[in-house]
Length: 202
Image (cartoon, rainbow, N blue to C red):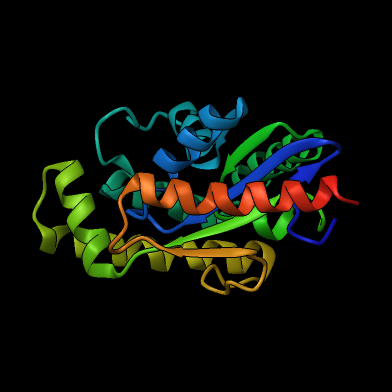
């Protein structure tokens, strides 16, 4: 099967990425439910690392908080947090049977394993979604997302040398600005099914 195939070691693997507010966590969970896969989140794993350091990660919108910005500064200075999580995600991807919600997995997982999907949304739409989710103003959401995006890009560029917004590793890019979650899910499933049919014909 071609690079970007959704099957790894005879088990379905879907890698889903996108900036905050693109709906990747929700879509990732729905994909896992649809195909009977395990769902794992790199962001949730990093929050567990932050909790171990004493951060209060349970409140809504934590990733857009000042406390999260402090944790991101620690990650920028110490790559061990990210590397430990990413090694775990790569191991899961190689085993198969998983949906991986992560900003790095499309770059780090062996080529030929997994369908790699990037969900796009414009800054304005992302801010509206985050403002609604976190109960803050759109202006505050825009500022928080801009700072988070900048710091996250700096972290991955320093650790791995790639630009988070370089979409070259992805097999499928879905613009979610004007699509509902079910529409996004249907688009991804259509590609998964097409690749599975192609694989079965070989």
